[in-house]
Amino acid sequence: MDRGEFAIIGTGEVPCGNYPERTEFETAYTVARAAIRDAGIDVGDIGAILCAQHIMSNPDNDYNTEMVFGRLPEAIGARDCKITCMTSSGGASSFSLRKTAEGILHSGETDTVLVVHAQRFSQFTPNEQAKYFSIAGSDVEWEVPYGMTYNALAAMITQAYMSITGTTIEQVASVCVANRKWAMLQPNAMFNQKEITVDKVVNARMVSYPLTTLMCNVLGDGGSAFIMTTAEKAKKICDKPVYVLGEASDYSHRTITRAGMKDFASMAEYLSPIAGLAYERSGLGPEDMDIYQVYGSYPCIQLIIMDALGICDPGTSGALVESGETSPGGKYPVTTNGEALSFGHTGTGVGIALLVESVRQLQGKAGKAQVEGARFLVENTGGGAFMDCHFTILGNEIPG
Amino acid sequence: MSKHEPISIDTIKAMMNLTDEDLKKPLPLPTKWSQPFWDAARQHRLVLRKCSACGNIDHPPYLYCTACQADEHEWIEASGKGTLFAYAINYFGVPFPFWADLPYVLGMIDLAEGVRMISNIVECDFDELKNGMELEVVFDDVSEEITLPKWRPIEK
Image (cartoon, rainbow over all chains, first blue to last red; front, side, top):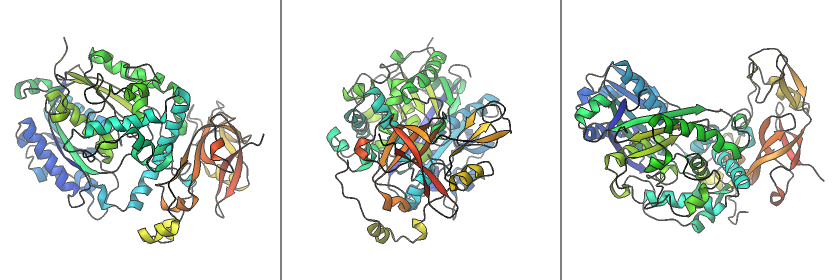
């Protein structure tokens, strides 16, 4: 990919929360139209439509099957659509969808791609959800029989990280507080009504020691979409395109026990070069970033990623968050939509929502959460049992 | 560590309208390449898959060696000794079959043979759990066919 070869020109989103009456089909059609209108294009311009696979399918009216077999182009009237497909890499789907879109654009078959995500967790019972999330992050043969859960996986990583770095539980909790402050500025966030305090987070019901309920994300119904095009076309039709300036990836493992970094203290050693490569490819450095969009899902994972971004010494991100510098008004705005912990966990959509928020910020459309004059940001995502990591540098200009 | 009272399994059963089927614990479904591990566990032996070509030990085991892709391998007897790398204590929000066991400990165990395993840490005082502490394997016969290797602190 050449630097600045592709651009995102519009986004759409629905509120995240408990919306059992809003089917995933309605959500998909709604966010698609919103993104088309926001981009100022005609639906007939769209030549490819990509859907994120949603998780926990309903066999009686299976969204995944419908989307795989071309429901969306027909339903939204995309009369000149040539290509449709579904893509997923769990929490990293925002990245794999975007890479797929880039490949289609690079092929020259079309110059406009729509990417859509929709999820409705509320149609499943709590037991179905608990069951799914015990196997999503864990191995069914080697871990699930021991009562493993996603929360326990994150709890073990948190426990190891705290013990190795000396990070305190209050510092871990301060990530949740900062996320909530951002979500308070987001009209579509699931939790945007009430601030939380470190004390409240630490003293909430224990779920998986050392994680309390307020340190674990909550599943929500939601969806978002974006329109991607070539930089060449974007410059002609969009006032403020958001360019992909650099990206870098790595895959580590399926089973957490097979992770390349055996010692979580060296997590930053593993992640920093990936972030470094993305910075290098963009021609920019950490100090040039106006926002740091970190996908953690759990507070400690956000800390581990922050350690790799070049804004603090590895192991000290907890102190940085505690200082308030990652909160609204701080020097290092981190995760400006509040992410899985406060915006809400929409399955494969957490990263897509973060990407959509990144585009809004760089287009100056982020409302109350707007970071004034934001030009460049680094965005990260990853999936599974922290199986992979992707860093992307986005900007509303291509640096000379 | 938790000042919140646990919710009893009977309460949950009534609240959620659960059947006995909903409360059945998930058991490992051995694969062609993992069957020897579970057969040995049934005999209260802990074994690991070692590649005969390059000496790599894979856990979990796979169809062929993940280091050199060779098929030839042997199952070696593990020492049953390890150290605790990290742990979590589940108090709440687990699949219903595990509700009656709350609270319980999950740990990442570094085996003396160099591989890492997730299992339960049993027969332990929660307040004395410490990363790096020495552990030994114990066997829990959970069904006719399946025995789960678990770990407990070594008495000093």
